[in-house]
Image 1 (cartoon, rainbow, N blue to C red):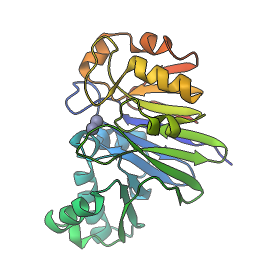
Image 2: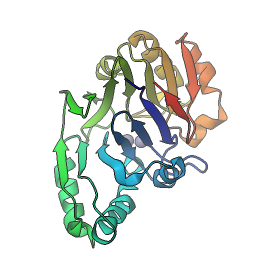
Image 3: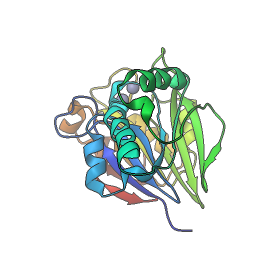
Length: 253
Ligand SMILES: [Zn+2]
Ligand SMILES: [Zn+2]
């Protein structure tokens, strides 16, 4: 079985000056996205991946930094399907609240309801499902008290990729990352300048070490995180390979 490829479309947060916000392209036997934050659509175009072959978008939660580029993406998909050709169906997957949100969006934005492809909206919690031959396990993580927030564990063949979404150090995240080959974790802050609702670099290292992962990718940086050596901070806890995420980095899992 060929390997899984992960491309970081955005390693920053909402208003980061040089990094797009949260978004990841995953290629297995299928092509799908994890989150779709502002400026990640531009990076998706730069990868050369065919955006019309994206069949699933998995959202971790609905803060704008994980979501905003869905709007121009869907507008384009609807237009394309009407004017230029057929498109495979699109499935939107996310935590509680996904159906309500997307039903309103599709009904409200001009042109959205005339898309000529099947749109499926699914809410998921802590149970596995498949996309083609790829096994996905969502896991509830602690981030915002007012929102149901998910991370995703993605297995293709024997390889496992874990994505935290936005999360604090918690039991759900440890389970999500258990023995993963690669884990992409929310490293919003440097350890010496922590903030609420997110991990800092040492939290990421600690999760990586305790979950026994192989390679840690730090991502979701706030601008403050770029002023410190977050890799070195994560190394205080984790002895495996650590990569400081950057936009358009592709790794084989
Ligand atoms: Zn968030
Ligand atoms: Zn975020």
